[in-house]
Amino acid sequence: KALFWTAVINGVVAVPVMIVMMLMTMRPEVMADFTLPRPLWFVGWLSTAAMALAVAAMFATSWG
Image (cartoon, rainbow, N blue to C red; front, side, top):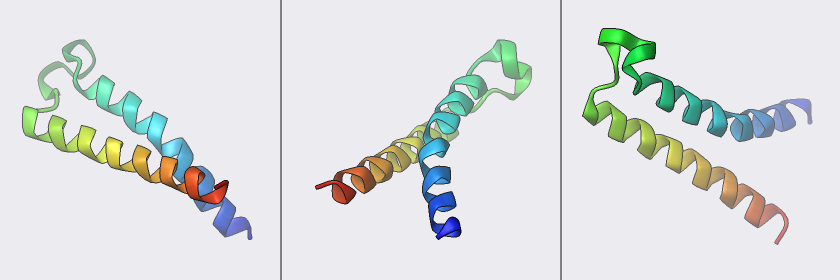
């Protein structure tokens, strides 16, 4: 049971962490010359959205 709930919590917490990481990697004052190029920017936000949808689907199906 502990492993299951740890995985659930990890999935839920991953979404805000991914959002903060995406915002930080896009800022030149944070990353200097290593800012995220546009193709990786797109893939990163796509992955963040997919993770958020997965978490939303998990909550929608567990209480519905």
